[in-house]
Image (cartoon, rainbow, N blue to C red; front, side, top):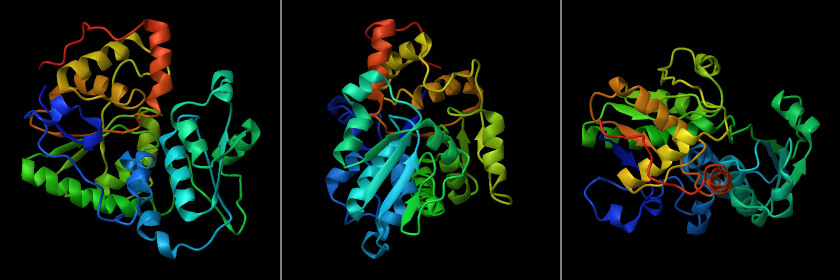
Length: 315
């Protein structure tokens, strides 16, 4: 299967960069020229665009006491918000429903990096439920970001992404863009910002098709992403041998490492729905490679080291 990948060059091996498969790598977006380069190790992928408003207006943001958010222990949004709070010189408090004993004793991946950025961690299932039900009210000098880094300003950065992606598609002659969905907010905002003759395609990874339909319906009158589904629907965060084998095949075929949590179920969906991709198309990599570290360890413990799989990508 042929595809074009829009990707940060740090994710590519030297052999891949020197080949003819990748047409263009992407530098930091124009809205964050004043951000120190080391922070892009924490604020990456679609989280960079979700936080674009704050990054672009960093010097003029009002002083606040703390930022709150909630989610999983390897959340990309958790890491990105910890870096944003550090840039703002404020506290970041993050609520987890639970944490495995192994990670309590020795934090790894995104959790370890967020703690190094000064994150205050709260393991509190009752508080987590209040936040998911939108029953937690922050103080006057506090902000709260929803799961996945969502905020009222999330759409701001996707106006940039829409222009960048539309330009890339026009240059390369592409008419479809694919990205997997967690909360679905990124796909929804991107579809609204894209040039209208370019189809945004997604698949539910965190929730299901009905959940995504509800998210997209919250923006009436705007273009909506096309939702593709696959069977089975993989349970979020669970381990599957066929996905572990698919990871090895993707690396062998492309030289590119993909996120284990979002990208692998997305690629399984793509392969089941080949008929939807009849011309060259664009895949938006999810980043999140730091967060994949602990999931990779779990895969190795369950299924052993990566080995050549039986799944083939060739069309």
